[in-house]
Length: 300
Image 1 (cartoon, rainbow, N blue to C red):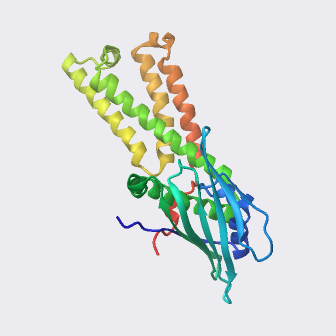
Image 2: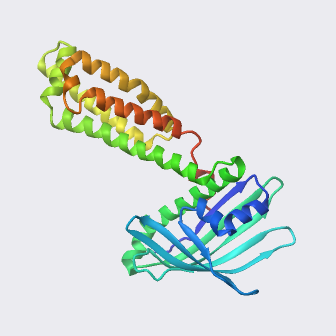
């Protein structure tokens, strides 16, 4: 299987010096680039390559550490700059063994074209190569592109990378949560389990016979599952958060009409729906103008 190098390109409405500083200063670089938690330059003499170490915290219990070397930077007559890198790690847990790449900075009439291309050898032999091709390489390519857009928004609009990532992961974390909640409550209590309490509450609201109530409950379950799936595929999350800000109060009122005594039950509809309403409100305000990997060009 022939591997393709990772290529990411973006145009930033900012002076080339600002883009250069944000990507060459280790303290600034580690703020916007998802691939690094920290970068530390090592002492060097004039004319020597710049050596550095990096860390990426994967979890509270796992941190991948590696080394790097800036093998050359130069300026062309047209103002183009570039920086070549050689990097790797000796940690066996890392999917990456060793690689090479470069940054390139091209001044435009308005702003800077910033691009990178890099490739690496995967760890763990043939299994590692397969994992890299189908899982890790697409993820790290996406992460690089997302990071480039975070840098673009930082330099153009002034919003800090920390704030952008907070809103991004809050929004998509809540989206995954709501997908699980809707699919779970559509499948288990209504379609698979046919919970008698669900049927009783529905029957107290609409006076139909048992087969009709069962059919309606299955229909509601299917609708909830589809809405959960919508959370996974629909791009404009703010629309879904807005819809839930309307749905959850209505569901609470309907539940209290159907079964007023449920208000004193543990984990009852009032507290449950109120919690989901507040989470929807948080998602509504966090989902504005999120960074996206789609703003980058991924092929030459």
